[in-house]
Image (cartoon, rainbow, N blue to C red; front, side):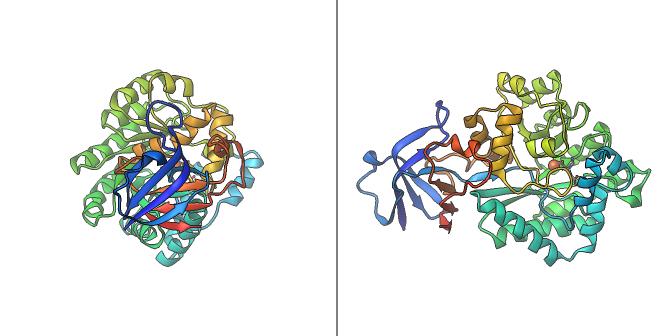
Length: 401
Ligand code: NIG
Ligand code: FE
């Protein structure tokens, strides 16, 4: 069964030009793969096409990839949002047992089904914008059972919705109250839980929060050593609120990505460039927390480091459910070009997850794409709200039309 999508303006994001335009373009889908992508006039005649769609000149981009979210949790932290508007800081709130730990309390008390229902609602909002691949971190359970539960919910999310879900183990997110004053003991547990979770097929990558209010570089290193022994890729919440040299540490372990990076140093940039680590910028958290120090975009660009953009959806620093809005913020706040921003939620975001089978429109890649009634792809970064794909295809199946 081959399906032809004809008369498209393709934004392939392949090749050297910023957008990788092909017009008039065509895609041939074979099951969940792109069999052929190119100029409609060169479509091989012998292909046994069984179904056809005329896209009437609409734009087609790769399916979007949200490569950093904390989607699985219960409750909200709207009260902390309000407290910050009255002068409290994110770090103060965390030090007084609020912040991540308040979401941990709510998450531990919630049932698996309630966690799944809430996560589905959030993921549907992203899917409606063309997101076909989503990373989801644990990190609001912080016991073996609660971390396992959240990772299982992540797997169920991927079975429930037509979205690929990549699950990241982030037990090193905050120190749970049972371990107060014993961070090293907690890290030993975090390392001890990982082999079983991996054997259960629940972990695609390992992350940590390396920060004064999170874990030290030494503690992060222990988590990474465990991941390395198990052959799991790592990523890191690095240099968000201060420079801990976390990026260089992550790069030493060949990290897929370092995320946030407002306080990234020149040596961190060099280490990331040498390791081929992706920089994931999270303008939602920057904006919501009212940060003023921007990640070093010019230096990242000069170093040739791939830049990805994500929602960082979480109830504390980034209650954001629009990846398209993050494109606009990345351009306005961080001065990315529109083409860089779009690559940041497709090609580079896929790279940040180690998924080489998506993020561009090319033969052999997964048939994940979104169809837009727009004149130009730069409009995806220009509108702030109101932009929705006309159709979304995920793994070859039309899931929004
Ligand atoms: O990426 N920085 C740590 N983790 C999240 C925030 C989590 C929370 O506040 O609940 C982040 O911003
Ligand atoms: Fe995060």
